[in-house]
Length: 353
Image 1 (spheres, helix red, strand yellow):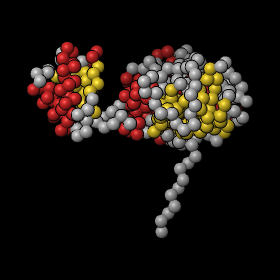
Image 2 (cartoon, helix red, strand yellow; image 1 turned 60 degrees about the vertical axis):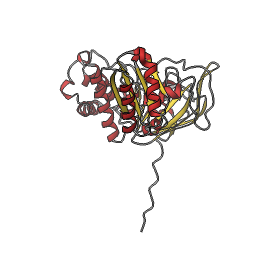
Image 3 (spheres, helix red, strand yellow; image 1 turned 180 degrees about the vertical axis):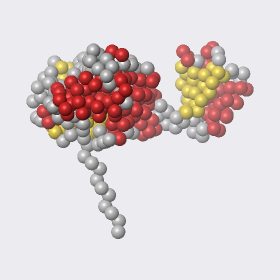
Image 4 (cartoon, helix red, strand yellow; image 1 turned 90 degrees about the vertical axis):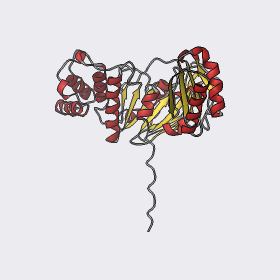
């Protein structure tokens, strides 16, 4: 007997035609989004695309002017208090107090969320252990590295075990080690069932963490899918060749184009040319042989898959604005809002209506 497949769980975040304007300028309009339970959903876009406005709307820090949005089953416009009880927010700037210790910060956030003194202390100890900060919990935050501060910030956002955690560019300014520490912490959160909406300008970050990605530009979603699906839009594998001499770039491009049968893109400042290939190793062999026979000295050659960076640049380029999702409407102007505030949700700057 064949069992009936179980339906996918309802999205933990869902928006339909969401819009927000400032005076006569729409920062977000026709914005459709679904975030699955227990997943990381990346929200990518250039500066001014509307990413932070979307986060502010979904966390009830701004009023909805158009469309609908639900978070954890509650309407952000009419059930703001219930939404705020089910979410956490980590903004672009750390919200922790540098004078206090890590443990004292977490206890403070617990008390602000109406936990009793014992419950707040117990929760602080749990979070310090989860985020690998137990050994430094009594030290002032001023002595923490950048990665440790962001992990503490993540811990503060998890005080109430939220169903949805909003991360607004959480690794801005961190070195590679600090970013890796935050990525490990985020993966741990998702493994325990937390859903994450991540805004970022780091394409590698989205590629590493996100199960699905929405690319947003001028206030609307212009593409959505898994990282692999989005990268497949750029075609198949590619060859990158770095030359020793930039003056032969045009000559080298002609040789590679004849060898592969594909148009070659040149990047003069990097002495690099790049082209799509159909048959991987065979195309690579033909291209290298053509350059060698043409007397072109090669510094490096790589056979690789497309990157999210290339997808992002292609979709958000003025010459290639991408294909908007169904129902998306054009908007005018960029997002005029400041970065998402560091404060946790709880006291919106504007009361939801």
